[in-house]
Length: 291
Image (cartoon, rainbow, N blue to C red; front, side):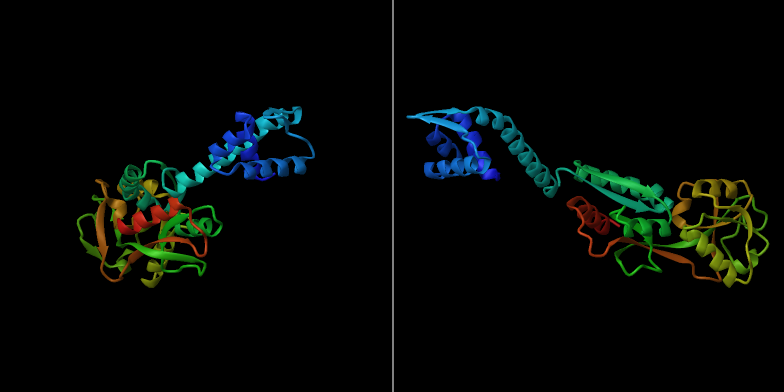
């Protein structure tokens, strides 16, 4: 059964008149008659009794009618759903970001996005760069904001943010609490906060300490950003963090590193060759144009 046959069948069944059904569908009456005959031949039953000019449904026709209506309604609903999504009235997309970005940058941006496209839903996933890239590669995230120094070949990216790493310390720290800069090489005896496996911050901290010639002492291993800053504020350790992480951190002092250039470049990435939904494409364009 094809949809044209079912459309013609429902029109005739509701009007019980081939001419009126043809008028409603804006086709010639012979075309309606041909479609009904084709449907009857396919099913092997008569759907209408035709006695003179009078048309009535057979038992088979009455049995088919509710199913035909349901099929046509489902097709119409599917067409409307796809049309609404293509017109950005409805849709869903997913975005991943590291904690500092999801906490300090994205709330305002996603609120603005929601105001522009109220029918589009964005699911936000917070994780480190390694985890986010894996989720993008597995097709579990449409987009992600990640560190771009080492990128897999199967993703594409566009620049999103560049910022410095700074040393977060307690304002009461006897050596660092009032300083504006420090050499990383002078921190060999300081206890460090290390972030979880998969977070770029962990790799950055270890590599920077190794370049300075020491293995960092560890005060907290695997702490998330919130707990790491609590440790720092309490004077239990120091941590290399992006500048963004210290927005509104009133009990933390920021010290710049003078003997190494420590910056991070973040990019907005997506899987190469993947056909993004209209919602995902719209979010990508919005984030690219509102960095």
